[in-house]
Amino acid sequence: MKPTPDRPDLIALRTAGPASPPCPRCRTPVLLVARYPHTWHNRSGQPVHGLKESVLCGSCDPDDPAAAGLLALFADGGHPTPTTPEALGPHLHTWLAAVRHRTPRSADLDAEEARWRAGDL
Image (cartoon, rainbow, N blue to C red):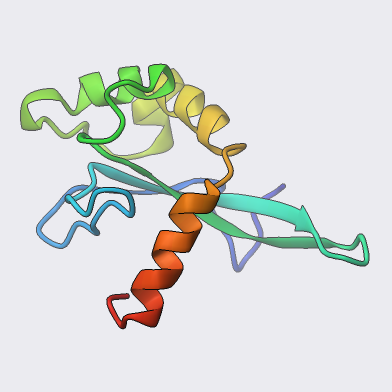
């Protein structure tokens, strides 16, 4: 997918800071948020273009081989600068290649729905 005026960058990054979002899995602040183009097909078979976000979490991702390189860059509170896709190099692309195709587990979706119904989201 090519950049367009409404989506100028293929990958947008946000690193940890004072207002880091919580990890959707464990609720601790995340190290990195990557937003990238994502396309799926609706029930009629037409492509739907949008954006998807994935988070890198220091608590949840240490056992993920695809995240190892990025986690090493953030080790000991370090923050790679500048925070561009090029600065994170092949580590970012390895991680994104893995997380782009992951689907949520049914138990996680059920738990999120329960939190939404309880007013916690």
